Length: 277
Image (cartoon, rainbow, N blue to C red):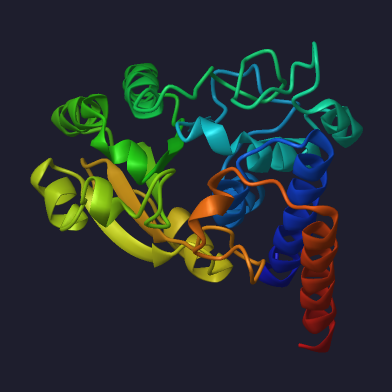
């Protein structure tokens, strides 16, 4: 997909994320807005996965370890045709399968996630199985930066390096804020790249909102033969909405009617600006 089309899709995806969170009166707004560019690139420019091949053993796999930002994943999966978008009107409603974390009951979702530190270990096992099958399958995950304090991630990183899983790519949504405070106040990660390299991973920094840079990097994996890849994607929590960007309360904030209307106006203006480029 051309980068210009991806840019439009990302803005439209942000509008939909806000629409369904506003309708549900629940959701993890800031994190969904920070990862949606990464998801759009993965599903539209990188991975070999679709509703038609989802049950094939040769499909690429994505498991969202940062499960609480599921609204962004729902929007991208609906756009790819895994289920009708209007199903999301039931988001977080009684008896709806579209709950606040990914579950396998939803078409296109590989694994239940949400308990932080679970996604990467599952992906490491899937990548090893793909290696043994010689299937050529690539396995991707997105982790939250607050999630990196979970010890299970570091066990999985040792495992992946030991088995030389260069078909595995972990992407860090490095927006530097978690639910209670900045990461630097809760559990500092730096120097995150040196730590990851010491665990045997090939590491790259990218702008997590630069669609061209994301596409270029993710389409040229592995970074190093025989090593799993870790992409540190520098992102902005609440990306795209001026009053949400880098504001802690939007971790799971729901906009008021006035805030919702303002956000939609800002995003519509961004779409108009694309037409003039």
